[in-house]
Amino acid sequence: MPASTILLIDADPAFAETISKALTSVGYSVTVSPDPAEALPKVSDHRLVIVDVIAGERTGVDVCREIRETPSMASIPVLCVGQTDDVEDRIRFLEAGADDVMARPFDARELEARVQALMLRFQRSKDIGAVISPDGVMVAQVRRTIAVHSPKGGVGTSTVATNIAMAAAQRKPDRVVVVDLDLQFGQVATYLNVEPRQTLADVVRDEAAMREPELLRTYATKHDSGLHVLGAPHGPEQAELITPDHVDKILSTLLETYDQIVIDTGSWLDERTLRAFENAENVVFVVNPEVATLKAVNLLVEYLNEAGTVAAKSMFVLNNLFSREIVKPRDVEQALGSKVDAELPYDPFLYLKAVNEGNPVVLGAPRSEVAERMTRLSDLVFGVNGNVPPTAQSNADRGPSSRRRDRRLSRPTSVSDRIWVG
Ligand SMILES: Nc1ncnc2c1ncn2[C@@H]1O[C@H](COP(=O)(O)OP(=O)(O)O)[C@@H](O)[C@H]1O
Ligand SMILES: [Mg+2]
Image (cartoon, rainbow, N blue to C red; front, top):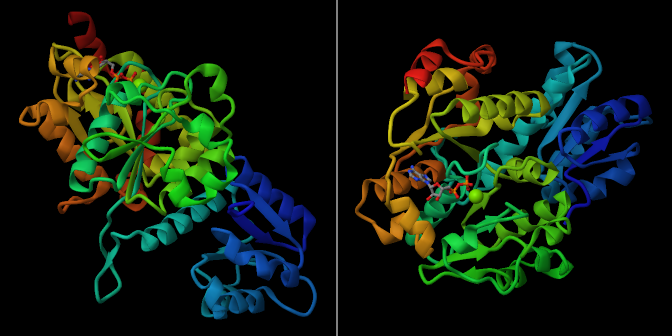
């Protein structure tokens, strides 16, 4: 496993500090190396290389070319920093094989956005489901890691996570795992009526298992359906054993042995949740048509917008938790400042029965509308059966500026009108 995610080759200590601070503050781990000779052997242990100021005989362009010409490093994205805004400079970097070039001076947010975009692009092209057309355009994007979250509990996060994982496992038995990162009081095992003998708390005590896919598989509990479950620790006191780096390691090792991963990240935002978001290709936020949830989601999206680029891969699922329509979907979208990607119907009986029997709706009532919607949602988030989930790019097209504008609306007028009429 890499000791860090990003390798920064930089002979200027002040610049190196600025760049690594900007990136570590949003959850990346960064190794700085001033000397290319010392740095090059480490390149292939990282997910991204940044080439900044290079001292001595070699130039940044030389270092970039060297990385590109070495087959073992060819799959690692390289971001080069130009010391001036000179076009010729940029062209030289691009000709040397840089995947992206950024010129000084730059803003920390630009740096984060470029790093995130590069990582996503390279992660995707490694995805088993990436289908590239002859002209080099990605035509299908099968996703592999999906996080499900809500800043408020009791809104259907675990219900969504278990059902979309189950629907995925029905397509691919033994190839899908659901990870319960709701570390303190995770309910995924209960919702599936399995009793994990070993949980994430046991996994993190086993360094080898976090590294070796086949060993890690032995920690998962198998449901009769073919869905595998990596359970949450047995109690809150064990939850603290799991660190953000463990989350990174476990999720990347799981990808080597499962095709698809669903992570229930519960309702608690911490560094571990953020790492799960970072590892996921899409983050599904479950929202209810209710002002408190919408406010919480707004605050979260605002925070994520400022702290990094997770917002760019967010999807919203509107879960109708109430028998009456109190807030209209249109008003929910207005309050979110974003489109709702899927909607789940209210049902007075099916969800509750599923929880009490530990049998998700997609298994217990496969012909119900709830099950159909869950299966469609699973297809959508994983980009299968012709579905194209939103990408960082398409979300950017939907306009972060519009999201930013709308999230200021603490209570859309139509919502306040309706809520009291209720
Ligand atoms: N659309 C819905 N209609 C009715 N009940 C629902 C709906 N979605 C979820 N529920 C019920 O709400 C409760 C909370 O769901 P859960 O998935 O545990 O939420 P969370 O993981 O966000 O805390 C469960 O009892 C579940 O059965
Ligand atoms: Mg839950």
